[in-house]
Image 1 (cartoon, rainbow, N blue to C red):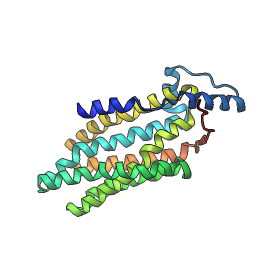
Image 2: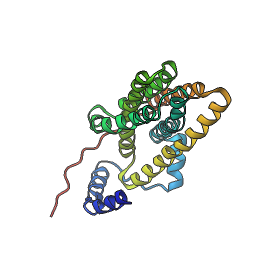
Image 3: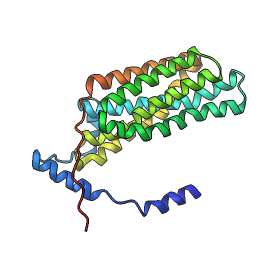
Length: 241
């Protein structure tokens, strides 16, 4: 409750970006024909396949959170079953999100300079390799390294995906595009938990982790093949006063 109230208080000091969107819209319209805002159903349909950009980013967000659901649901079971103490299990469980949250402070701005595709593809491949490595090693130290690598991979992917959605969408329907992307991305949590549980019950936990690792790398390859590097729009500062 305290954190929620503190966030509500800080929200009063956030500057609305409506002026930035209007400026960008006018600049885009001056260069190209106006892009009419499509309905939600059209954007949702385009995200399923026909729009290479939206599809690539949506499936990558879905798979990224799919392996995230695996990490939260299955990894603690592996650690405790191996004989690690509750303290060691807690430390390992914290390494992944801690690495991810700290590293994305650097990887987000990096995607502004290197482009969106490279961080997304390399991050998905790194996540997949880290998941597979997780089943090939044993022990606290080895698992800590694998989880740190998983966190770095997620940090490469997470901010770049959101930024890329903003790049491929016209300002007039960017908010809808982000909403559709987040629909697919957050559904990945549910799918990851269900898929990991089913595979673990049927074939064992290592098999479940390896399968999702392969799926994650395949998702990165899809991005490499289908996603054209979005144009990063750098607009003039919005005048004040």
